[in-house]
Image (tube, rainbow, N blue to C red; front, side, top):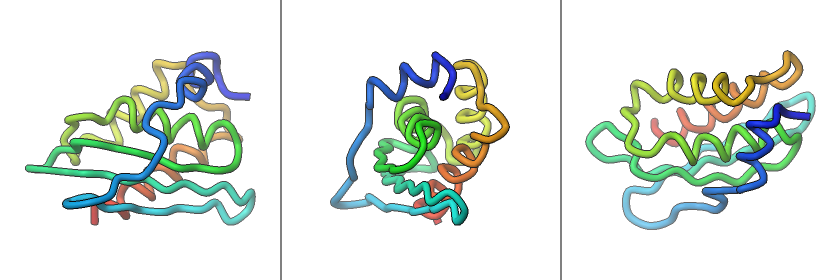
Length: 115
């Protein structure tokens, strides 16, 4: 199970859904071994994320990191996304070794949405 801090993020479930309309893009990532899936929808403007939404299935870590991304990446420079997300994960108790795929998967989906 994820850390208490990440569990609380997951329980709030902020940012669940998909962005549609002008300037909204989406990216998808899947972990080929465990089958976890995440879709990240973003709206960016002037090099900053303006909105992030998510849909995920799989382990609690994958869903918690997707929810955390939607919570902490508001008005973050695109160049700072990885560092800001990693710091947010660390400050909420971090991930166990077998959960690290969740952060990588969410970042892959975000990068796809932003490319």
